[in-house]
Amino acid sequence: MKICFVTGGTGGHIYPALALADKMKELDSSTEILFIGNDDRMEKDLIPQNGYAFKALHTSGLVGNALKKCMAICQMFKAEGKAKKYLKEFNPDVVIGFGGYVSAPVIMAAHSLGIHTVIHEQNSIVGKANQLVMKKVDAIITCYEKCNEVFPKEKIHMLGNPRATIAKEAIFDEDYFKSLGLDLDKKTILIVMGSLGSSSVNELMKSALKDVNDDLQFLYVCGKDNSQDLNLFESQKNIHVVPYVDTLRIYGHVDGMVCRAGATTLAEVTALGIPSIVIPSPYVANNHQFYNASMLLRQQACRIIEEKDLNAETLQGQIVSLYANPVVYEQTHEHALQMGKPNAAYDIIDLLKNICKKGN
Image (tube, rainbow, N blue to C red; front, side):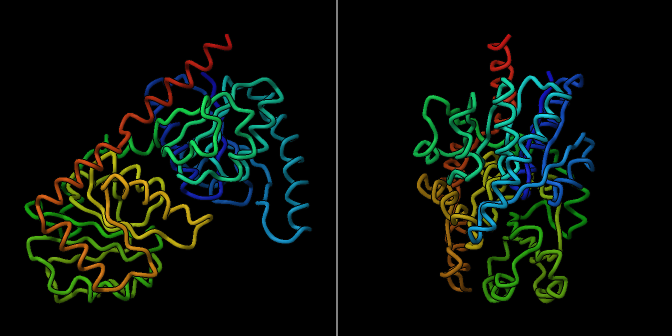
């Protein structure tokens, strides 16, 4: 099968696409894959670094004043024409868009050429690019029922995020775990607020983790930009601070998380059934992290603290009530597992194959 992925702008769009591409190549090495993305965003470097062919377009979001929006529309039409050239050269069986403004002109180009098209929506709030093309595609893959309020219901397949499969199948690296100063015999709580961390959370963390149960150990990822915080807990033996951690290598021994509500993180957390305290970032489009987390909260699969309510007392209270209470902990674990989609990558691949067969 020949498949074209289009994705860009943020890791939330890019990493699920890479996860699916990796799984497709693992299952069938003859699969031919092309990525299309922006020429000035992280995908232009990240995709080739992962070994995939990459073609670039230039697009912008429909934001700002009237002039900027007009320029963005002109860029989109130009990008659609260039995308047609790329697609004619590659001749894929199907094009799958993972969001970001660059996906809209490519999906429209593929539709005009009679190529099968699919979009994937990672969040509970439907992105603008996916809204633009939702009526043109053959199928829509979602992760949350809230998307049913926007998408044409007859096209929806709620299969989940491919990163869930990667997390579920990740192999625990005991040596790496121990190198972080962690004890295999203790319950481990991972605190991570994205690759760059959160300086506001770092400020209150010392008070929040003061006098926590010694039966718990914490791995606190302060972020690459906050190296000055590496010595926050020198006097507390059960709290270990690092600037970065490869979560896939330690998920096998993570018993709880304090984290943001990005689509990839929540897909991984639910696939593994990890009870989590979620602090949605208020600095994302359409406040989608809050709505992502709300879907879990509705099923009692996590706890939420909004950043406006975040302080040492609220965070410590949630840590104690969730991780020091075995009954509550187990219930949250079970509810998270029920929401997980650990087979997401395989289910999406089966859908793509079936769509391609219908056109043959």
